[in-house]
Length: 98
Image (cartoon, rainbow, N blue to C red; front, side, top):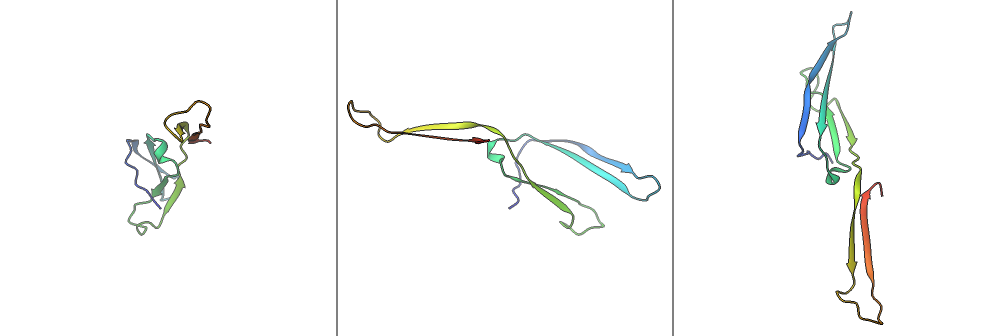
């Protein structure tokens, strides 16, 4: 599934380079994204938009891998510990890398 990112997008204009002795051009674009942990595994797509190709015919997709510090939660089974009785805590964490 392709997810449209609603992120701060910074970039530079397209760079167009002619190829000597060839009637073609290389065009490159650069995109800078400010990402967060929720963007991990989001699909980023690069699509050619030109009259010579059908929409979506030339594209490349890649999964975005975001490294982020673990989030840790500690949850007790009960709110109060009673002296002499068992008391359990559940500790869970999520981060990348795990």
